[in-house]
Image (cartoon, rainbow, N blue to C red):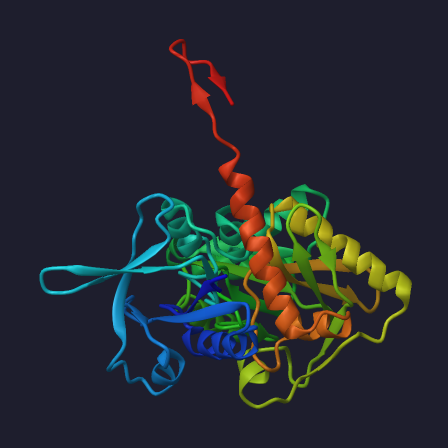
Length: 370
């Protein structure tokens, strides 16, 4: 039987372009070549789709020579990439797409929407979960409404800041008190995040965050432990053993994650079974609430003083680098990297097949029927 062709899509137009390349390399290196044929597809920072066996290495070296520019055929269910030539074109069949894109244009529902329009199978969460969870302000409002605890926060946009910076800073100080965290609402890997301890630091931190998004989240800084939970599944998701981030600096920022290695992780976390179960149950609840599919890494805060658990965020396309928590948590739970990738592919097909059965027609009177 022919192998399943998996198109691993990486790179992209976000600030996490380089991290995405590393994730894709780990996925491609670990995938079972006895079952799957891999087609690496890199998206440049200006949005070109380039395919080729050596795409990972060439993207790492910023050398795109020899790669083939392709586009997705959006004819429903065609499952094809098209390479245009001078007066003709070639077709390249793909069985399933495996996005390894982080941040905007990859984790926010945009490329998921493209896959939905083309009616092709893909791994991971769909448009709703991706878009809701990418926007921290929207996700927090949703969790709060559903009774899932979140840390006290304030949200505002660029227009409000430009109209009255004093009103915004007064609100932050009055409602949250210092210290606080300033974050872009739409960004991952702690890009654009600052911890503010003094009032005169607020302006600089807010304007820094506004470089990455027009909506800003401000959270009260508590004395916390940071736990992470890996979720796997569609309608009946499961949670892996919980991991903990042992922060080396002020907080777990981009440099700590990918550059200087000051922060460490511990998997499984050194916590009692009762607390671990509470975190797992809360994370599964959040995953179901946003209609998650395939995978998510869900981050929680544990207040050392009050012993309360707070939902931080749902990462619908977590990192797959060598230091990434998502595959580590499943590894200690008994699911090795290669089998994890295979399971994600199976779940992608499962999600796709479910949608193909949901066909609705209408009679002449406008009544719908299956």
